[in-house]
Amino acid sequence: MLVTANELGSKLVVADPPIESFEMRKFRGADLRRVWEAKPKNSTEELMAFGHAIRDCIDPESCDVDNLMNSLTIYDAWQLVVRQWQESGVPMLLKGVCNHPVYHIVDADGMQTSVYSASNVPETATVLSVDACGGTASAYLKAEDVQVVQVHSDCMQQTPLPDLTLPLLRQLYEDDYDSTDRVHLLRMVLAAHDIDELEAADIMSVGKWLSHNKHGVRNGAFLLCPQCGRQSTTTWQMNIGVFFE
Amino acid sequence: MSNIAARFGGFPSGLDDVGLYPMLSHHMGPLFTAIHYRSPELLVDVIQSLCTYDVLTMEDDDFRYLLALVDRVSYTEDSRVINWRCLAPRWVKGVEGTAGFDYTPVNPHNPKYRKTVCDSLNTQDVRFTVKVVGERRKLPANMKHPLISSLEPAYSAIKNGYPEDLIMAARWVDCDWPLEAIADSLTCEELATIKRHMYSRIVVQQKLRCAFCPNEVLNVDPLDMFGFLRVFSDVSMMNMQFNLSMHFNACIPEDIPLKRLLYHHGCYVQDRREAERKKREAAAAAHRS
Image (cartoon, rainbow over all chains, first blue to last red; front, side, top):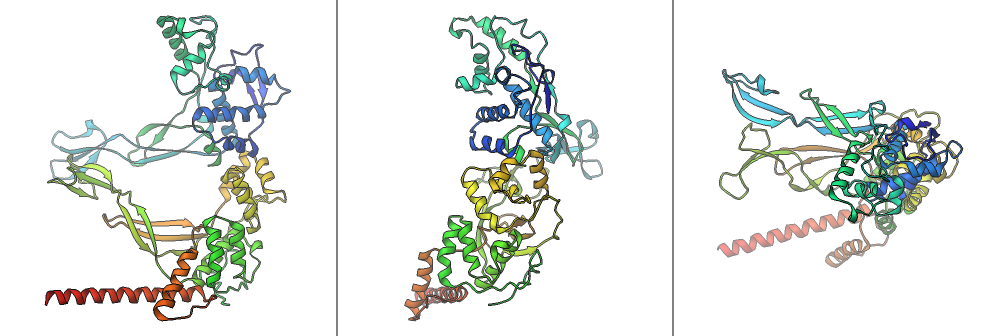
């Protein structure tokens, strides 16, 4: 499959020389087995195992593989894994519990009913209790529903400090970072600086810049409750188990 | 040899002329080892020694059906003790052990009650019912029903670190390659297609009833090859033979059918319990008078 730089969350702005596009083959059983064999304990270790698998999948004739792997951010790597899932046609089942309120009321005639909104409760009625709906909502995530957030086009020009970089996949292999921890992300961005010598205001502005340029795949999805018909949100996580569902 | 192949409705693939010998007590040693250590090779060997058909050429579902037949021919029809936890909703008021504590399995629509789960641990004697459900399905062109001969390579590959889902899917591919090579070459699309078509027709169902709330569960699972047959360790077998020979001065032959040994020992245990009950009642009567 052809992946262009403009599809990716970071648009490969860190790449030097810039990369337009590259060719990637689909995951095979051997790739999945290598990720499985690594027995990742958390999402960072899983991402590192996926990184090796992605490196094997990239066609070396379509781009400079070392340059590409050095310029992928951690969110780009997750996006490539999600892209592999999108191409595979494997279903992903999302499940959630509806937490919208249900009002159990007794109206003036003594009839017990349930209404779904406080505004629908008649003035003459007495509210017995308010419960969560509790309906089990489930849906299959569609491959085309996955949304990607991208960095701003001038993100590397308007940095608060010089020599900043986006959190890169390469850095996970170099040092003991946790990709889900915000402090670790800041340390990755400020890898070229000595944090002890920076002022607090500088670090805060870097944190703001990082949040402003947050990118990658959105992991939210909507579910429809079969009992009350109201919409609720849920989140999904990409991991190796998704490919075996 | 008994021919009871049609006991549960016939073999799923329509196999005929399968003879089955009842299991003898000396088969229990290897069977215990096979199931305790999850060794498919040994399990197939033990079942092969009881069966006139070549087990390695059977399909998975036929083998599961054969296990159900072995259970019927070689064991007494006992219930099995299982532990399970009830997860039915329950509405509770107050704190347990204090005045005003109350709980109900239906929603009372009362704000004083809060929703929890029953969460009680049940130990229950249940009967396992084996059923053949559905019909034999037609598979796509590049798939086949897996054979028992690929069971041993599959488990050795899983031991070598292959994911179980991948290997079990690879068994359904119609290909002459070694299993690990098939698993390595599968694409995610093929894996998803195979997973959609994998099925098992032999199911075991148990009816569970919670002792603390009106919850009833009908548990239906595919027959687990390594969890279905009841096995006894060497010490259990020797204990049974020791009890019979000590209390009845009976000479227990080494190759006694397992069913007969279990039945005799069951009768012995029942007799002993009855005697103990009578003794207790007599002691209580003497104490009263």
